[in-house]
Amino acid sequence: MKTVYRYFFRGLITFLPLALTVYLLYLFVAGTESAAVWLIRPLIGDFYLPGIGILVGVGVILALGFLVSQPITSRLLSWVELPFTRLPVVKSIYSSLKNFADYFSPHTERAQQVVVVRMPGRELAMVGLVTRQDMDGLPGALAGSDQVAVYLPMGYMIGGYTIFVPRSWTEPIDMTVEEAMRSSLIAWMASNRSAT
Image (cartoon, rainbow, N blue to C red; front, side, top):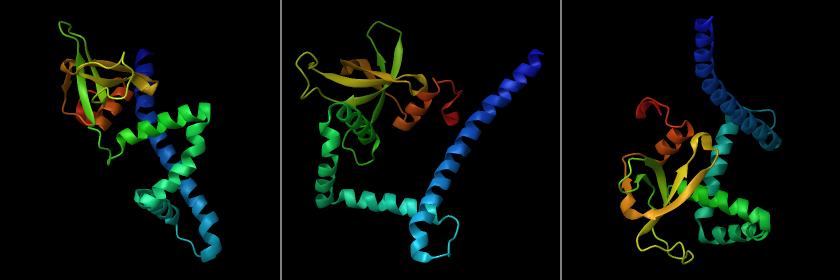
């Protein structure tokens, strides 16, 4: 009976990630296709090719990226963002999500660095992301002589901690931010980097 349970759970663990990925892709494709039918059909009539929705979705995202890159549009966007940055609870949520997304954007000036944090004389090691290279603009209690802010993500993305440590406690490792976040998501259970 133990063998049956073992096979069942192995099959389940293999099936679930594949099924969830396929399901999320299906939701994305179905959503873009239905939106395209609703938006484009009045313009092109009954002529419709499957896949137009995905092309329209990609086109809208590219156009939005181009528009936001223009100085005039970025000023207009700041006016649109105004209510989201003024309302008390909404401000906290919106600002946090925007800053988190900006950290991963390719145009950011911030050095995206994965580090191992080790306290001197201790064997404990933690992997984190450097989110701030200096303490300029932070309250005096956080301002250290040569400190960095390191975000330590928790397994399964249920949160994380930001710690302020001396720069000498950190050691950069050869890993992208995406690899580190993926590995943290599964609590570093993958057997090697190619598996992550």
